[in-house]
Image (cartoon, rainbow, N blue to C red; front, side, top):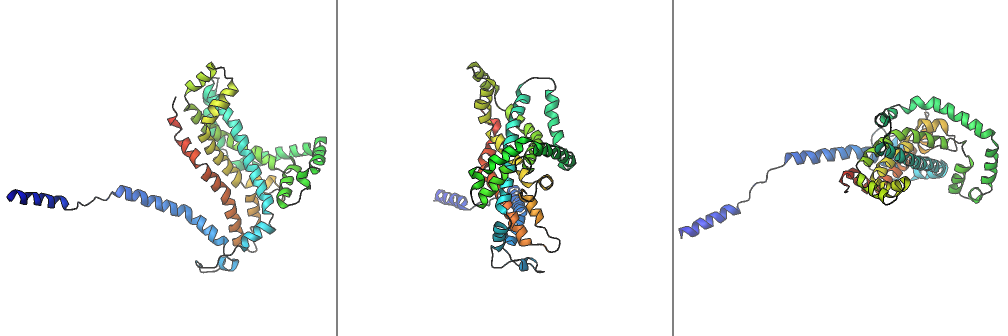
Length: 331
């Protein structure tokens, strides 16, 4: 009987729930993440909400949180502000500068990482020093250089022949705002400043992207290249078939960085492009009226400008994660 009582007492002790200790480190960690998320998303929320307000509500002295949303600001931007034309300019400049930067920097990074030549270490360490030069400092000499190139291009016979040929193609004879914007890109040739933006953005982004890709290439086992050389692969085949596929994570990170710089840059775009060839940040700056700010239109344009970089980052998230774990490549 006593034994049974002791067993029942033991089972009762086991049934008493134990208090779980609160992991305050984890709580603080998640609280900090929530705070950072709110800080990041709050401006985006304000931009979107303001773009859906009428100008009267936006200029109200007291904040208005409950209102009937309207898309009139977006209709004004899309119909009366030549949004498609300026969108094509930004996409053209952003994508082309990204492609040029990745193409050139990948070969440069591979040469620095794998080939032995005098000054290789100095070249690798000074790439970021060039990137530290502010773009504003380079604005005046770059504009002078480009104006000289434009004068040379205008006076050449190739320019007139090119204009005559492109004007007769179906690209420029078709109707529609999209086809008109696409024709405008090609018919202006090298005189509209967008090619200049592509070259300048590529030159500004090359140092950082080269430095970034050097780290990715150094994490690739050399045994893979030696095996390909034994099988008879040339230098270009080696890079195209072995190195380049393994650099997809590095390409994704570099592409987002390069595209973001080209997509958001204002000063060079403001100086080099004209009213027909403005990029979206320049067009957004043109909407600022000192006599009366149209906040709804500004926020609507800002919302539309936010969409492409967010989509690019979202669809490249997997490649970015692979790039962050590039050190796990197996030989």
